Length: 97
Length: 453
Image 1: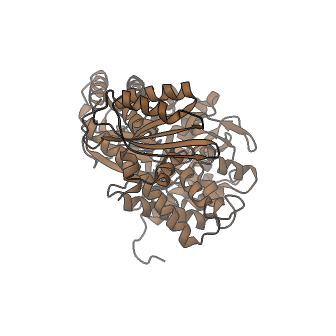
Image 2: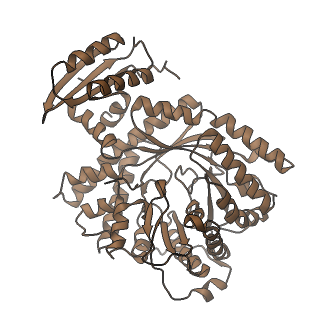
Image 3: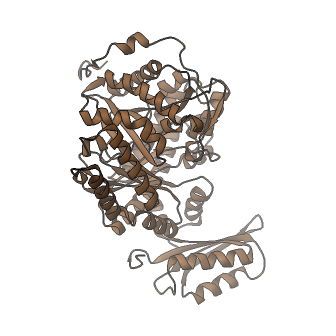
């Protein structure tokens, strides 16, 4: 569908799962492959749960948002992680006036 | 980072854990220009026009849903009240129109189409009569068609002939769908002061003053409000009001975003965001539990009406701050069968029909999704409607009745309607007769607008 929407350039990626070696490596490698530039990244471990939030730039993305979501979800299933990708807009409207 | 972790996690928690959703994106379509000389030509024109505007509706909403990561539960259509837009048909022909609308909805993948409606608060046209007579059959042979009848308004008073008629029509509709617990009646609303831009079912229609085509959004989120209040167990009422306002603000902004994008992509004007706390049977997604969270042992205890008044007003204030396009019904809904807290309160003996009626004086709509014994006389249903209409008329607000006299069921039984319509125990109605009252006929005049004491 309409992917030319200019306001929709950034996305928020969240990754949640049991902490172990290589989560950041796996996810960031995938993002690089799909040409999503990581603008900001934060990570923490809460009660054994690895939680990572990334702001990614979608401007050069190699796929549509829909495809990216399913690819990330695939990786999530393989690695036993919950990975979501959403347009940044919803966070903007809810938290910024 | 442009957002704090807390902000991002808050939004995610609202969507993933607290059932924040866009309840509906409803496209309103004017259909009066679809009237042709013959029924067949009219039906074809209806299909053509609705498909032209709404052909991409569902697909567009699904894309938005995916991009933003927020569920859009229903994709709906509302049309100009059929009795007004397509006059001059017989009851049998109106049934055919309903069947066609159902088919269009199925073909387009929309969940409901609202507007199989008549506005008779001042009086009936021939078309109104024919359409209302068609309701029992139309609602029993269709799945996705929703009907509403406006029988009262603050400016016109209450059309008691219509109220009397609707009691019988509701009974008949329930009986015709008896094998499904009278579900036909769950798709039929009787209104006082209906709004013309309501995206919520079963009462949605595309009002006569609306544009050619428009997109409205209905947002929900009782679970989000409940979760926010639970974090402040000792808040004062002022603080509670603040918390609800802030939460409602955020929810409405999400709705506004969805509406704006949907309108842009469908190339249709954006109408309104209706922020209504519409409960579902999901855990925690309950308006009753919000009231209980304020300190009531059960919804229905003394204090419930006051709590609901606070909630309803704070929701409106937050919503109105978030978008200039706030509209529709905006407030708190109390559909009994769709709210686990309400169901539990009835089972505990805490909530009665009388208390529900009082609550409707301060909340968004009215007696909603109330199941009563199938043996309830039509005139008792009519009188129950009359009371509710009086509350709306005098208080200058929208009220509605969606009551299901479940065939074969009596007080203490449970019925399961399924889906968003939920399940409920059968409520007790007054055993005393209103028959003579309902036989009188005529109108209850519109109320005086001064001397407001």
